[in-house]
Image (tube, rainbow, N blue to C red):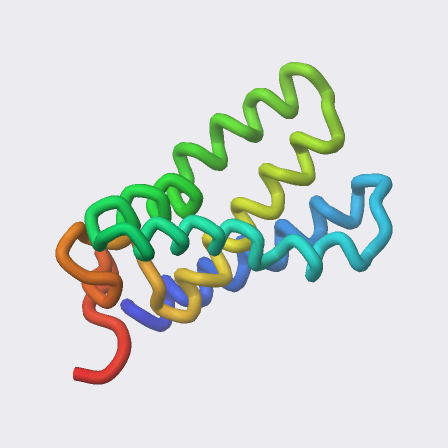
Length: 117
């Protein structure tokens, strides 16, 4: 089952590349912005609870869906780009096993423990 979930995430990531290709941005914008949602990890500089909140805020598909709804409602290519980057980043992370964080530790995710055991 774990392999199937990873394949689904890879498929979503590839779909995001397809969607990005239909926007009028230079190709380099995609890789340049792909890791931007990881800025949410900065909250861990304060404490694990704030870090988990800020990380999850930028790695939750509901938030990405809200951005996509706004982008489609107002037909704004920059918001479409933001939504595609969010969805692509989330899928990329989850394909690698990084999930939403619990408040006790960065390595404790909804997909299981990450890192050394």
